[in-house]
Image 1: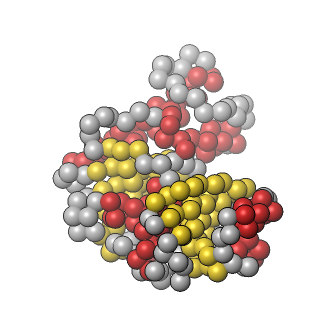
Image 2: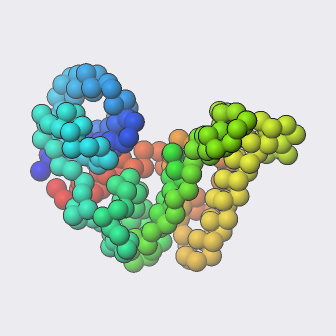
Length: 241
């Protein structure tokens, strides 16, 4: 297994690698690599003398071998012991990023219910109850996906870049911005209210690049947590070290 003094974890997604270097439990460094930056990625590992990796990957076996085949690697799988009880009905289909997010919530809130709101390509909610049982959550389209859907499945609507739009849309572009932004805002606020009513003393952790577009109630047990998924991966590693 991987040395516990220095641990390098990688969240390997469909378009990029997100890498975190932990030393004695503290996250020291975060790096991003596009999947076509194989040389830069391997140069970084060589420069830092990193040979051992704990990886969550959605990539093909061939891509994993090309990127990580020359290193000592442990992969997160559906068989990996986790720091929570998994009550998901199809655990083999549960996304590894959601597993890592649930691990973070369970590790941070022992004895209390917690949820993670991850706002990236998709908007994902993951809930762990006060007994440390992962219950599931929800997945819906993220900001860019909603814009792309309107452009792709209509004849005339343009492809726009995300923008905050709290006002009523008085032209087509602003109406699209209002629909996307206000729709997501209403969705997340409704789920915050629902989950807080259902789980007494619930703490919510918010992460993901698109969370910066939105505001969340202060003094309401809602906390931004940067690099949450990497930290969840590290907590899973710790359990298995």
